[in-house]
Length: 338
Image 1 (tube, rainbow, N blue to C red):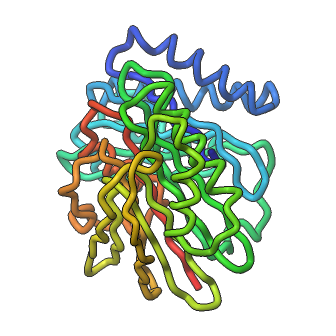
Image 2: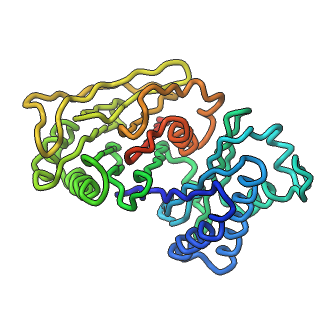
């Protein structure tokens, strides 16, 4: 899969902190960071978990290895259901504190991170997103017309994740695939991995035909549900096809529209007749895909100002409020600026 599964680490109690810090350090070491950068990441993690304990009554961290513009890195997302941060701009300054501490936590996180955003609402909680890269990103990375972020986590207690997201981008088009293997655990993960391989190798340009190609390729697995979406840069149009309960929604600042998948299971039974759904491009629209680990009744318009933030924050907000915690969970958000 292009986008690795996030490691979901419990930060609800101080007794977890030593294990949490050790796991993140090991992941960061695997990326190849220098000793100096690893020490800086350790400081950021320490400040994040300290803030969770002092100000939010605990929370959790989502961590995964990432790559942007060909440069590897690590992403940390802190999530809590605390009271929120009053006057965030003030609290980012060194010496600012609401608990009579030294007030250097958020300032240190800002200085040491290569990328930082914080989304917070009163009585709702806070999402803190930071990223670290092996080297500085090229200026062209910020001008890419395609923004894609995903948050994929396994069912609590599982290490293998039966959800998977992948994408391919060329000069002609952008292709997205979100799949959810039946059940959860290693067998579900194997089904999604087989579907991803078919997605990557299928020569067709039609989402429906790619689904059919997958259907044949995964028949020896337990099967999956999935959606394929393709954006053609020249035509400025989306086409999509889905089988099973992957939720697909086009969302803007003022409206949202759901798109219905066909009934069936890829690898077991799919409709004999399927057609691509065509969706015209509109400036500012977001495509959001969710597996059934996310409850379906969500509304992005209730999250004040969230469209100004990185798409990982948007995806994490949905996960925070709507994950069932009884299955693997995935949220994918994509925005195209052409």
